[in-house]
Image (cartoon, rainbow, N blue to C red; front, side, top):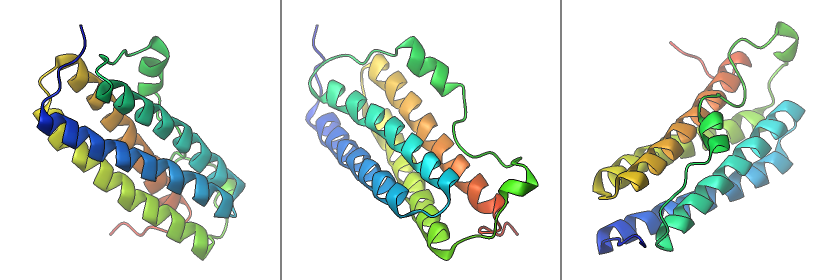
Amino acid sequence: MPLQLSQKETMLLQDQKHHEEMCIQKYNKYANEAQDPQLKQLFNSHAAVEQQHLNTISQILSGQAPTMSQQGQQQAGQTQGWTANQPAAARTAFNQNDAALCNDLLTTEKYVSGTYDTVIFECTDSNVRQALNHVQKEEQQHGESLFNYLKSHGMYNVQ
């Protein structure tokens, strides 16, 4: 049975679709601009996950109930990306441009994660809510890995 989305759900999901497209574009663009090879890898990894998010939103908008594959559930339990406990040798002097790219993406992830709250609360289908909760958790994991990268390279001063 196809999903019956309300006008409000459709509007909010279309906004999220746009946000995911923006995230993919930013991560891909910034992966090409970053100097640190590990940062490039982090951005490319996040871009791939953002593509999965876009696919999930598109599936919901097309009226199909989202399916949480086992692969997707396994990935949800893993924090992908940079951890705060990287070896000291990995903590190279930071590049101002890399810091700016990371800070922009961290701000973007904070915003996108927050917008999922409203969408989740407005969805009537529990499967859609579950899928969007999963996506939001991954957005938060992206933010965490960006924060950890910045902090471990002296680019983010926690006071």
